[in-house]
Structure formats: structure tokens, C-alpha cells
Image (tube, rainbow, N blue to C red; front, side):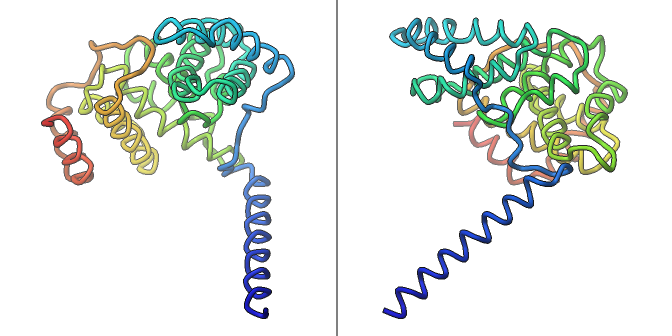
Length: 265
């Protein structure tokens, strides 16, 4: 009897600690791991139901196109939160939408990023659902529109999320997503993407960018389903690329070995 009460008290205490910890984390403006803007507004719910009725019985690419076009149109009009909210509701209704959620979120980000304007504002309208696909898409669109990719372009992108009062959770999403975006822009040439990460001035930023590049490389090898444009003609001098590749291989030997094994298989 005593043992049962003791276990119950321990569980209750653990739940209280988790709730307090979550509340504290959500109260921090600088680092907020629970940051999300995907809560569906009523219009998103209605649109999700409408799309489900229209596209739900389709299969394959036809279904993906049927869902993605209106979602991308919303994002192109600046309604990124509405698009992500609609996707959030679709994933509850349709298991296929949930499975392909990263593809849709990535497309939403690309469509939003293509609008131009304030990249930081667009970026902040995304959220980390669906493996942060929306963030990655915005960054990919930013680099695709850039005339060149050098130190200025790379360091300018995430600048709005630096500083004492900035949201450092968004800073991480930005520099980590940069690794994803660079990898896709360079048609999954990992060494070129790592070279782009090298342009970042801050070491923590570079490490976060490297992680995104390696992650995107692995995802592409194991599940090559992504949307959006790629660019293969940009990059740093060959000498820089070679030394960069050697340096990252030493720093990330385990992950590089895993990538090599996957490609050999």
C-alpha cells in the first residue's frame, strides 16, 4: 500500500517538474524549444477539410500536387501561418499528408521565400513542425535568389536573430537550416555546402550549419524526396573546398563514415 502511494507521489512530482520546466522554457524569449506558430485558425480548419474532400482519394504525385498548390499559393500571398496551420490540420485528417509533411512544409517555405522582402519576418512565420521544412525552404529560396554566395550573404541571413534580446531558438533554426539550404542549392554536393558554412563568423553558427548539411545529405541518400530549385554553379575556389572537406571529415569522422557506407551500399 505504502509502495503504491510512494510511486504515485513520485509520478505526480515528476509531472509537476516537467510542467514547471516547460512553463519556464516557454517564458524565455531567447531560447524557446516549444516555439510554434502552426496552431490552426478557423479558416485553416475549413481549408483543410475542403482540401481533404478534394484531394483525399487521389494517390501518388497527383495527391501531392493537389495539396501543395493551394498551400504554396497561401504562402506566396504572405499567409505562411495559415498555410502551416492548414497543413497541421491535414495531417490529422490524412495519414498521407502526415507522411509527406516535410515535403509540403518545405514547399511552403520556398513559396514564401520567393516573395522576397523581409527574410527574417518570413522566417519567423514558419515553425519547426515537419522537421523544420518551412525554415529550410525559406533559406533555400534566399540562396537561390542570391547572385553569389559568400561571407556577406551567409552572415547577413541570420543576423536579425543575433543579439542579447534575440530569439536564439530562431537563430539555431536559421544557421542549422542554412546547412540544409546550402546542401540543396549545391545539388547535395556536401563539400560545397560545408564550404558555405565556413563563411559564418561564429564557431557555434558554423557547427550548427555543419550539422544541417550532414543531416540533409543523409536524408537525401535515404529518402530523396524534396521540392524546390537547385543551383549547381556556385561555390568557393577549389583549394578552399579541398581543405574545408578535409577539416570537416576530421571533425565529423563518424558521420562521414556513415555517409560513405550508405553511398557504397
